Amino acid sequence: MALMVPAQVSAIVVCFNEEGNIGDCLESLKWVNEIVVVDSYSTDRTVEICRRYTDRVIQRPWAGYRDQKAFAHSQATKEWVFLVDADERVTPELREEVQQALVRFGSRCAAFAVPRLVYYLGRWWWRGGWYPDYDVRVFRRDRATWGGTDPHERILVEGKVKRLRNPLHHYSYRDISDHINRINHFSSVAARELRAAGRRWRWVDNLGRPAARLLRSYVWRRGFVEGFAGFFVGLTAAIYVFLRYVKLRELELKGESGERREPG
Image (cartoon, rainbow, N blue to C red; front, side, top):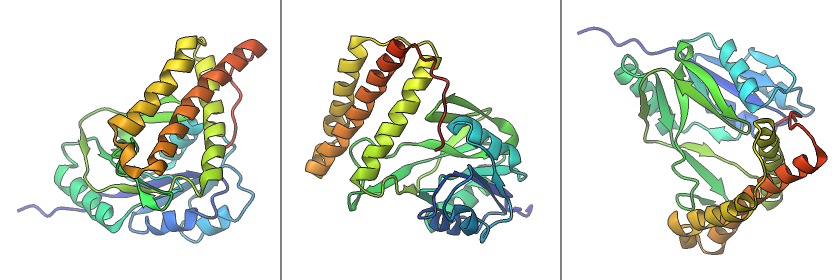
């Protein structure tokens, strides 16, 4: 019987001012063969902390979510790439599953999609629309490219994608204030992307889409089981959608192109 050789894995992490998260993130990645960090000139201790875990720390001006992650991908040198955000953690169970999957299915698959489990407001969010949120995170370095639009970039893979079972833990928001600030930021990014793509503002988008998002989160995805917290999460999701289209309208009225980018 042929000896199974463990796959070589590069982890890539894109970050900016993440001193509160980056240590735990990189600690959970110590098992990989290479860690590549692309930092957008953080002004806190992020880079100092990163250099405790890897000498592959590259500073690069912010180029947008998709382009920054594509650049990090281009810097990886191993056969497989594992994309992890600074506010995410690879659990021991997920690590073991990834290692086993690469040995068992690596010759037949080009990528693996990982579920993400959010921790917020003192609980794990199994309901309300945030789970399982499958996302391609482990992929062959030479079989993937980048698509989508900011802030919803995605990995495009040539070949079979297999789903894994154990979730990536995602510590999305420090608190409600951080949540609201991120909604404001990401809705601005999304509005500019819509504008740059030639999308026009419509009443039906600004009224219908937020209502649909609230119903999907709170009713269809059973956010109501979480009580008021579930309603809050559903409502903030709807507000994000509402602001995205309001800001698209604002860009139209100002005659702006939507090309401006901001650090993550």
